[in-house]
Length: 447
Image (cartoon, rainbow, N blue to C red; front, side, top):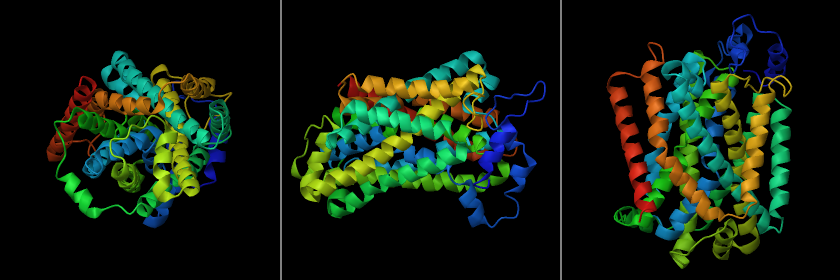
């Protein structure tokens, strides 16, 4: 889709829908537009990639959110490099899960909650969306925890940093279409690469990485708790809902599935590289100089890193990475909540609609931001909350991945339906990931 086409799409969205049409469907006007489809025809693949890329990269950059960054930091600080191997193992699992959401979105042109409602009925749709809302609320708490923590590093009060963030994000989403929001999210997400630079500056030991990877304390309850936290930090319920809705709202169709898959694969590699960099950074600094140190705030993590990286630049670079992670995730999570609820209730839910055309979509978006910011201002322990939210995500995996797998074998039309040997492989991964996440989470909670 050409960069400048959002304005035209917004204008076309104001037209009255034909009788009986589903005007609330995400991208219902765009995905069926001949002009939109023809924009992709006969393009070289690299140009097609530039136009299609976005939903996968954005959701993966959001995956490395403030809560995930804090979980990775705790992992490195408490167990050095022992959890590093999980960051690598989770790359193909993350890709397989998110590729199914792309396949569902492009073949059905329906959101995740909407498909569950069609295939399994309203009751199960509400169960799924309830899972989504719980995950979104938890995620927003961790994002605002990260944002307020960064502000406190520079003496900015929590209310000021959170208030400015809410105002900025409301303006971004309410004043532009999907393409504008995507570009803003990608630009913000680039700040997360600061963690990669910091990991290199910390001079990690390759020998220690290999040694720790071969000696994981699987009987240690604290270790298992962080295993669950890392699994939940990588595969989150809101990611499934977001990417399926985003590929539709962007106006993509089945003819772009190859490029959309590459977008997802590149994003999966990038997000896990960033997660691994955060773990390596803290393992090379905090884990080496003061292992098992308790970290109770974002400021403590930053201050613990600065002796080996430098006080001023350590704070600045860490703040850039954390702020980028938190902001892009806040955009994604709050949009997901608005999309997901709309898929079940039926209200208009596209960024192609102006606020007065889709009031409930924007109201839910704004209320989710206000709720997340308000709870963080109540004074909860932000680091423990962040790790706990990721463990909660791991406990929700059976519901999220179960619905995703069933939809992939029921709702997708031939020949794109999940079937044969690959279906058995995906089913095995779904079961194994769910069991590991739930077992590790419960073992850590009841230790």
